[in-house]
Image (cartoon, rainbow, N blue to C red; front, top):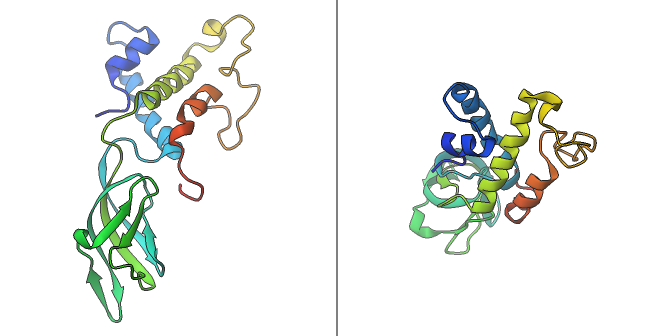
Length: 184
C-alpha cells in the first residue's frame, strides 16, 4: 500500500507519458516524511526502537502502533523478555503497558513492532496528492499560478513549524489524524 502511486500522481498533475517519471518518484518519495511528521507512520512497516522504561507504559517512537513483535529490557543484572500476550497496547498513542499492571523498571528497552495503518485513509491520500501538486508547482514558477495567486498555494503566510512547503489545506485535511502532543 503506497501513500501515493506514480499513476495517482500523474493523474493529479495531468501528466501523460513517461518523461517525468524519474523526477516524479523523487517527489512521491518525499511525501512520506512530511505527512508522517504530522500524523505518524502511514504505510505499515516493522521498526526496532530503544525506549526508556521506568513507568507504567513505554512509548514507541513511531506511532500508530499495530502490534509488538518483541520487547526486552533490564531487570536487575540481565534483560527480561516480555511476551506479546502479556502486553496491552494503546495503538493510536503508541504506548505499551503490562497486562499485570506492574511498572516497567528503569532502563533501556528494545522493542520491535509494526507501526502504521491497515489502509491509507482517503483524506490522508488527498492531502498527500495536494501536497504533491503544491511541490510540483516549483517546476513551473508563476506560469501555473492562478491569477492573483491569493490562496494557500502562495508563500506569503508561513505556517509555524512548516515554513512554506505545506499549504493550509493539507494541514486541515490531516488535522483529524494529527499525532498527540509530545509524540513526534
